[in-house]
Every structure is written in C-alpha cells, then in structure tokens.
Image 1 (spheres, rainbow, N blue to C red):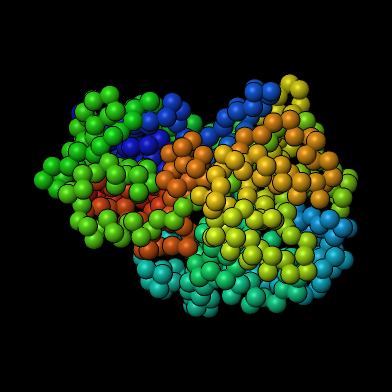
Image 2 (image 1 turned 135 degrees about the horizontal axis):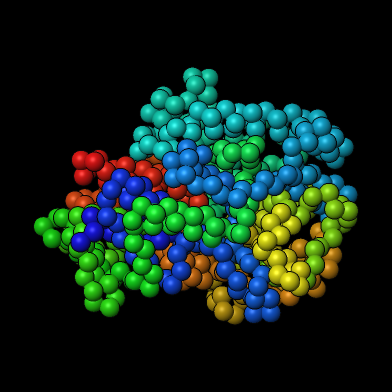
Length: 512
C-alpha cells in the first residue's frame, strides 16, 4: 500500500509526487490519459506534418520559481525570447520589446510618445519591485491579501499592491499616464485578460496582471521563456525526478471515486474496479471534477457550495497551426527577431479599448466576436528542434474571450468558419498568412475540457481574479484528502508552487 496516491499527472501533481518521494514516502501517481503532463505537453498532432512538434496546451514557461527548480534539481533547456513582445500595426508603426532599451525607446518616441515611454518604464519598475517582494509568498501557504501585503511588501508598495490585486486593469494601467490606448490594450491583453473571464473594467483583472508579471526564471530578465523540446520537456523532467526517488506513475489509470470512511480518505477506485488504499490522497484534478469523485455525504454542503462558487467556464480558444513558411508583416517586413516573441494582434480602431470591451461583452452573451484579443506565437524560430525535415514551423493563436457554449449555434458548426476568420485577421497584419497554413488543430473550450480533462475548459481551473486565501485551500474537510492543483494558491499557469506547497502540508500532517 502506498503512503500517498496522487490523482492526475499534470505538472503540479508530479511536483507533489517528487517532493513526497524525496522525503521517503511511497507515492503512486494515477493518470487517466495515456500520456503524462496534463495541459503541459508536447504533441505531434498534424497528419500532413507528423514530425512537427507543438506545445498544444501551455505554450511558455514563466512563473515557475527558481527556488523550486533548484530544490528539484531541474535543469531545463530554457530559451530566452529577445525580443519578447511584438506589437504590430497594419500601417508603419510597431513596437519590438527586448533587452535593447535604447532601440525600444527610439520606437516609443518615433511611433508613440515620450509619455508612453515614461509610463512603460514606471509601471515595469513598480511591477518588478512587487515581484521581488512577493516571491517568497508563492512557496508558502497563503495569507489574506492584507496579511500578505503586511508581511512581504515594502511599506511604500503596500497600498498599490492591494489596489492592484482588488482592482481592474483599467484602474492600474491608467495610473501611469499612458497616452496610447494601443499600448495599454497590449498590456491588458497579455497580462490581465489571459485565461480569465474579465474585461478592462472587471475587478480582479489586476490580480491576473500581477500574476503574469511574476517571472523570475534564471536568465529571463523577467520575461516568459520557451522550453527546448516544447512544454512536455518540463513535465517529463519532473516525472524523472519523481521516479528517481521511487514514485510509481501509472497512465491509463482512471480514478472513478475517492473512498472516504468515517470522514477519512482511505484510497481510490479505478475504472477497471481495482481498489488502491493509501494514507493520503492528493488530487491534481480541478476542484469541480474532484468533488464528483467524493460521495456527496462525505463533504459538508457549505464546503461544496464554496467550491462550486469558484466555477466559471473557460474563455480560451487555442488554434495550433502548421505553417509552410513564415509570414511577412507590413509594418516590419525584414526579420528583426519579431517571430519569436508574443505577437499581439489588436483592433486597429481609434477606440481600441472600447472595441475590446465590446468583444468581451459579446463573449458573455454567447457570441463569437469580430476581433477578439489574440496572442500569436511562432516558437520554432527560437526552438528549431521541433521543426520537421520539411522545415515547417509550428505556430499558435491564443485567443482570449470565446464562449464555452455558443448562443443559437454550436462549436461544431462554427469552428472552421471562425478559424478562417481569425486567420483573415492575421492577414491584415501579415498579408498572405492564410495561404501559408497547411493544417490546424483548434482547441475550443469544450475541446480543452475533453483533451486535458479540465472542467469547463478553464486553463487555470479557477479564475486568477481570485488570489491568496480566496483560492482553493490545499486541505479539505476530509482527513487525508488534499488538493495540489492550479486552482490553489498561488495561481493557475505552469508554476508548480501549488504542488510544492501541498506536499509541505501533507508532510506536516504526517509528522514528517
């Protein structure tokens, strides 16, 4: 009988398994899919280019604490994107954000304004200071927002920190005096809206903005990084650590119930009828899926209601592309490194923020918007190891704000048409892009749900509007049953801190 059963071999579950196995506990990880990694995996999904590798779910590594990398002795092949952001337009203006500050300042002054450059510097300096102060809190159980500010943030930043976490993207970005709505929109889209049910004025989008600025990876300069071999490299490396310390990882082992007797978790039952006993069960599944595994009478109704209140459906569409060749941008036709970064496609209207807000309202009404916010990736330009012998590029459109369920129609009817429409938006910035797409794999919210096993297709399990003690607790009212998933503190994304912290809670409970 293992000491611990971990349900789900996503990255957090694997971190928990590795941490507990290193401390001498016998650990079994049960994964219902045939491959490990959850949404953090590398796949080869294209029939016409079967050797072209793609990170189909999570695209980048940004938020994993360097302390966790050291503790697990992970040596990941991290590749810095420099430049890391590209903001094209359909005219001549653009911004290419990288380590060359002088060149970036030149672009700001030529295409935007001195006020925008000053605001960009001031905001990133403040976020960098908050990142440094908050970092230790991510690898410890959460405190309330106010207690977190008191314990970790320098006095001069505390009120700004609290207002950011409670407030909206608008309230934060407008503080710094940006003149260009396009620049504000870019920061809102990449940091505040990613994976979130929220618009420019939604309280809590500031929390998501802070989360996405917590990158401290070695050599990153605060920017999110590409992992050589795709995101599956991350989960395979963590699994190797867990196995090295004796953990058993079983795939094709679907858990259908968690056994609870007398208020104590006793083990699990698999789909094939097999029963496994353990002292502790830790679920890496999302909270809503996990609670369906527990008999209704085993958990207080108040607890179930509290967890259920955290649910919102996912609003993310991922369109993975096989490109025959690289696109050519009207605003920057020569190669200046603009293919490796996050490419921000935004409405080119004078009122870009108003256009985005309309897009969000349309999503809330169950409609597909004319111009959603789009992040575009072409990672094979930085990691050529994933290209095939024919030289295809992998690419992806990360589309924010699509409905889980469409009003008056279905995703089956609309998917192909909408993908073509999204590619036509790419054509506005880089004419002819549609003709360079050989094949695509679209993951709508329902397909994210089925492919990765995430309720509602929500890539963060629980909205990152919720932070600290407002997220899912590691402990449950059932003795011996714990959570380690992305719904817990600190946030959803490929971080691993929830897995680390849950392991600490289990060790404490076991007197280890």
